[in-house]
Image (cartoon, rainbow, N blue to C red; front, side):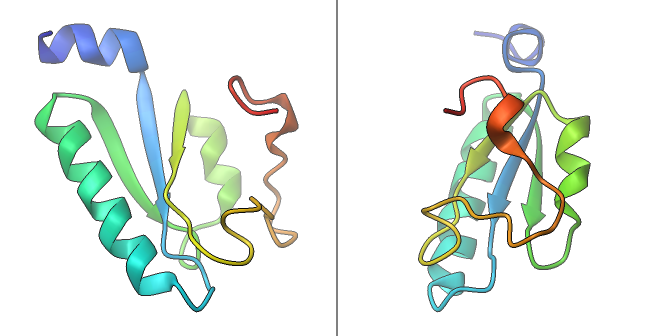
Length: 92
């Protein structure tokens, strides 16, 4: 599939990584691997460290890949930072 087709198919993708859990470093590594793989396939992808970015910015994306690990990541707790994922496609 071409880069143009991947951009149309997936739109703008955020890879959420890092966070503040004890597993932050693993999350950064796995998130970077996902980011690079998507980028290599021509997807319009942005890496977001959830400790450094306001999660309100997720509204600017069509999809999100959650590469967070540990408490607050695997349970997808936004820690009061403004991200309500209940209305997001693919999130239940």
